Image (cartoon, rainbow, N blue to C red; front, side):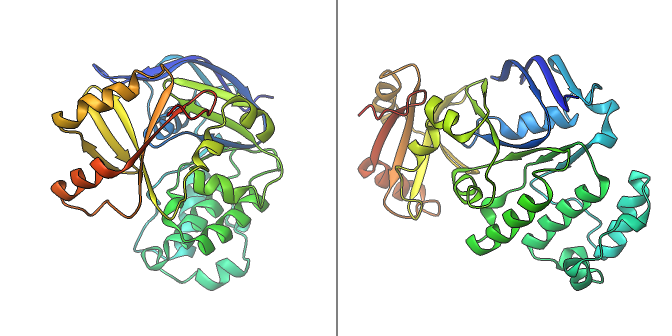
Length: 312
């Protein structure tokens, strides 16, 4: 049975851009990496698949039912861990069992649980909060697991612990796990998981690749990202209803008129051009005047998003 099926799924904001356009797919069990640049709509897609957003055109079926009619088959791990923060890990697990209508006997009393069962959730590190959410999804035994946690917030060591647990518990076993990922997570994950599928979201379009070789042969977006040294900062220039914006993660700047004209010329290079600004050092905490001065002296690189070819 197909765990997830979409038919001509289309969604956009009122008086705003289309985020997903005419997407049809059928996915069975396994691990699927949802890839795309910051702001490409990955979280919006997760919200649609989970049933949190339901005003859309087309069809979404989870185990042959609409998401809101298939709640027992869906676990959604959001960027902000959801739990009873003043309750202990054990109390939270028991509450999750009651909510899911399953026996508390299913709680796995492993080393992690024995170390933290009496700890209040709010006292857990971010890594352990994320692992708690994974364990709760495992307890619920959902067919579709959607993971949109902010894994870039973890250190390299913490990320390795997380991905090791994910690879052991959520890659096989009849589940479909969709993991929203970034270049940092994408590169690390390849050390732990041999087989995975890929959804690449870019400009309303979602493309499916059955393995990493097909992905690099088709879109090269992560080999493109490998061009950059991640100890330095990369931002993306995007054009939307608010004008030209410079985006890096959650940080977004509206570009002033005096630098819009040269930016426009970069977008004219190709319909599929992706414009990146390459900063030599940390820039997010600069004042506006310092930022604009640094922008003027930064290297601007243009890639074709379809071929990965550098255009300038």
